[in-house]
Length: 194
Image 1 (tube, helix red, strand yellow):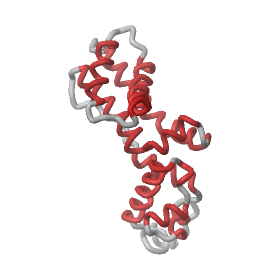
Image 2: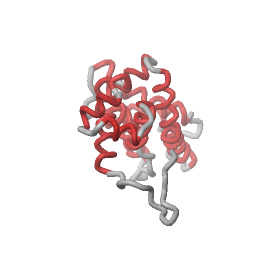
Image 3: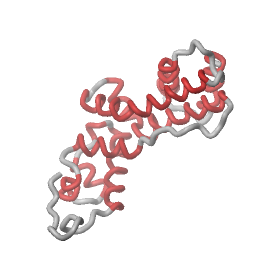
């Protein structure tokens, strides 16, 4: 972005950006994504939902793709080390992380769009944004294998796919993911990989 600055100052000309406005825009975009998929996220809809003028949105984001990237990127936190040493509890923690991404970030609208590949650009965007996140989960499994907490012949990448797939399977079969999902699937997966 080309920002004009005064020669004697390091601060851009004009009013400083409001973090509260940024937060409202990103939350509005995520809410629209969760409800209606990426097609529901456009500048008009974000302006209406957030109460922020379209001109303000365009000053921050070139287009809806950039807005979606910022919204999803702001909501996907890299998984940190699990707070527990017990392998089964670490597995439950990883399942909970998957639930946050699929439910609280993408929501049904985003997940459905990816499964149907309705918007290939969006699908690529999400895969790119989740690549470091997925790599961190794979590394977690590999660390547990190296520490002897999981079987040494385990395919870490396949385990992460199973984590995500179990959430999707529960959603497809029952129409919702129950509050007991993490515990139930942690037990099943633990018997398979422990």
